[in-house]
Length: 333
Image 1 (cartoon, rainbow, N blue to C red):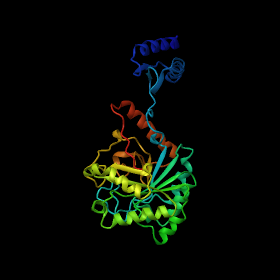
Image 2: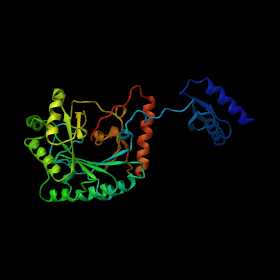
Image 3: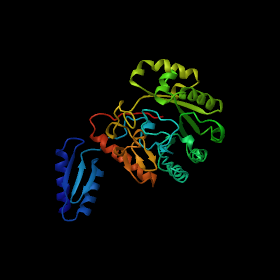
């Protein structure tokens, strides 16, 4: 009789609800048993048991929409895994989202954790690894970190391209060209405009790094951070990148983000960003542009990686269900 009353209550309350909305169903004296009844009824009728909270079941009429509908495959949270290998850098760019500079503490992720993340990435559904910083080429074991990643998945190494000489060039040459892409930062075809934000002489050395990396046989992407006044330069800049042999699909042009050292630019928050799971030595973050900001911290627990990715996906699904506008895709690679 209790079960019949519960089912009758379900039918009446859910039928009266608008499609996609949720209703609360009071449970009686045995909530676990009655929750099983609600779950079975939902499975038979095409509705969804959203949650059980104490003695109340929350039921949605119909099924929730796919939270990842409309996203490109590479945009689905957890498809790409970012790792901040370190935070120190040989440059002090005036808009750096990670607040990196030669004076920034290294805060290295470390080879052991990189290896474990790479090992757990494939079963967690990751299809690409991205190593960023800071400047990863400052690390004495960068070739070992890259090897741990390329052994598991195709990998991208983000760099300013200025340190390819001596022992670091030797380390670069030990990296797997078939499994590794290099993404080098270059912000303009105009040396003065680039150097104004990244430091005198950095444009010339970055272009030399692009040419050297291509000569060594690596696939090279170029990522540009554009200031608002550069909007009219995009096509001429792409033409310059064409002349360097950079394929159009490997030209990543994005606006400066108001994060880190930048006091102007695109406002990027958890609510406005499609997440890209990002790991630092401090924890798991929503997106690489927010990996030095507490508001984008998801969890302090790096492991198990699958649990961290699930937390990001769940939060995104919940946020997207409530959102009045689609989240924004802000590509970093």
